[in-house]
Length: 159
Image 1 (cartoon, rainbow, N blue to C red):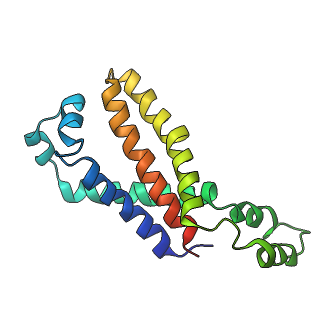
Image 2 (cartoon, one colour):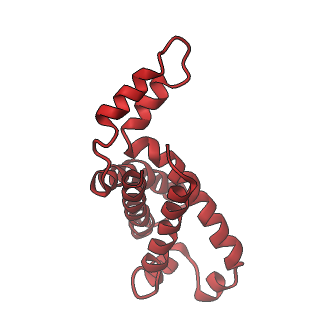
């Protein structure tokens, strides 16, 4: 349903948000303090490997987000390739409703919901066991809410 370019662009957008979000002039300094990190420790890592894996993870998130932000993927999975289902059912559905709710705004809404109700609780639960502060949860979870919002918008708008 989507091209590789859609997922690559969406994944890249998460890195751009991260560059801004975790900048020391935005939330970076507070995040480092709450995560128990120093500038030296952050800069001491292999940034190529870290950013590469962050991109891979964001790419995987993009692939899953399409099922949450595009209603038509549900129709496709319910009809295409299932024994006994006439392929014209999906074709007719797409002719009638293929462009319905395929906007950046609609995808951003569903991406926001995914960030708020999936990513934030994942971060929050881990933070509880890691004895992290609520500031840490709000910064890390807030990042994923914003990132998923933008990713969802990109995925939903691109056809």
